[in-house]
Length: 97
Image (cartoon, rainbow, N blue to C red):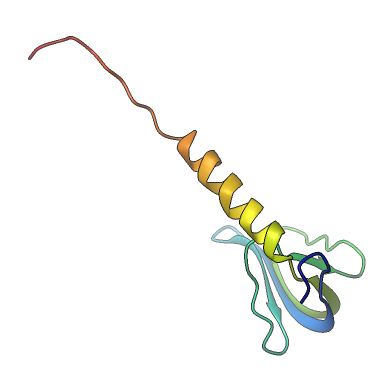
């Protein structure tokens, strides 16, 4: 991986989708030993999955993974820190108990 070039990995994945009263989820598990990190992009190829209520589906699809450059990883971590600090609420009040 270079400083300004992205590595591309083409592989397959297993997708599990559930749309029931108890669960509404979609999980993707990549084949191989590709580790995802901050800034990486994943594109699952194929048509959109539309699942009626009460059903569960497991299917296989091709997937493309673009690994982030070191600069993109740093940028993603920095932005995540800033977005996290937006959740903090700090109040200074003069009320005494």
